[in-house]
Length: 428
Image 1 (cartoon, rainbow, N blue to C red):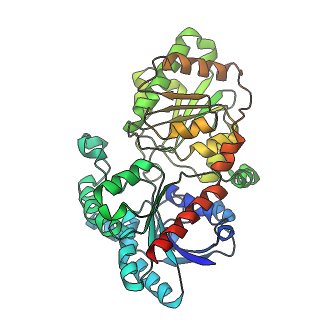
Image 2: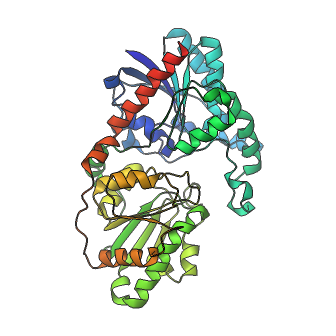
Image 3: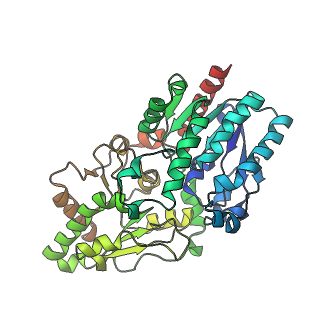
């Protein structure tokens, strides 16, 4: 049995999107010949929401080693709030100890807290151990360079330069790449000639059907978000101006329906939940101002605060239909589409014409998928979708069972393990 040490700063009970790949893979690694241990930051140092139910899906025999991090209240005064930077020293110290005491075949960085990945090159040099990086998002990106200042993330000037300095340290020595998007891999290979011959694989996030059982078991503990007596369409995930291109056709279609059939459409609510990464109560709405431009704000409910993962699954199950907006960044793939599909609910997806999600949704035989920058009839088609929701015309959706298996957590863990095998073979 080969052994992999996984670096994931956020880990259950931390409710962060970038630990989901690891959480869903842990039950399956042994089946494909790999024994996994995890090194995470102690949750008390993490400033993300906690969801204790996440631990229910982590196998009891998985060893999790926790490291400290500098106090954010102190480091924030210096402009350093990132958990990656706050934990870097403690990661080096702890993993040094583990690698001296135990035999590991591979180190696997699966996180969007990218600065910790520079330790891969350090551990490779010191302990001769290969490492793989999971590119769930771009690390050093020019995406915001031509965007107005108000659309850029906080401290963008600093992070842009820091990422440009740190990424080469990790990428010039990496032994394998996993990414949710082929474009991310192509971009890395265009920058670093050293990565052109290493194993690389595009592996999306998947879904774990058992998560819905956990959500159902604890349903009584979740707050009620949806309005009884209304037809409720739900999107749960981040907001932002980069999604306005995809959301605008929905609001135009909603306005059409409100004009042509106000009696029916007055009973329609569209929810955007968890749109901000800001602490609870401090999020700035990014969707309702757009709704106001089209006069449909009375039918839109935006909840900027994020909700727990299992609360999310519960809300999706209670909705009448689901909505997935894409980004104006064509590389963006909505990881939440797999849980959406497992619900069997009618699902409307409005995406960039170049989004890799189109190919995946086609595999599932998803019917209501549109390109906001290419489909000429998109407004009429979405209006028809909304009308079907308010008139109860939809039945349970049947998606391709072969695709459901292909994008299951088990299958996608197998794909990761195949790349692990290639990465250590290359190193040997």
